[in-house]
Image (cartoon, rainbow, N blue to C red; front, side, top):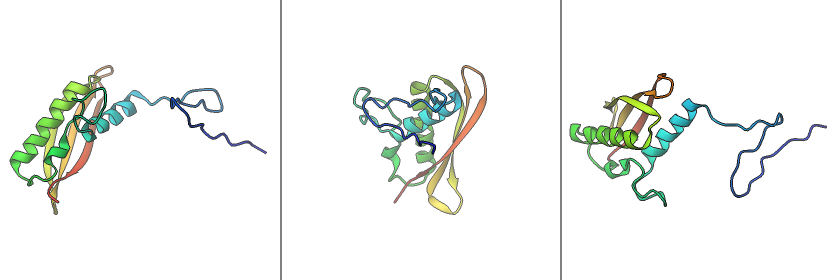
Length: 130
């Protein structure tokens, strides 16, 4: 009968080795994507030891879907990623209206990994008014 290994939960939350004794670390690409998501979903003041960390996109959630709002989103994304994610070279950030969903905007982030030069894009949707 094969024994199923269950990860232990404790403090600190450390990775648990697999059955071959290896630790599961994310790839650089995965780590950067997760970091971008964290930066964009965190509001300044939310992290205890880094009160300025985050994009603060929540400040624009109840704004109308106008060109000025989309430019503000673009500027916040560019500034926060340039400041907090040093493993990337930001190529462009574009913000568009979502067809058929006037309260949503689509954000496309194009970047390259600084270490390898590998190009990547990331898309997310932000809901405004309502």
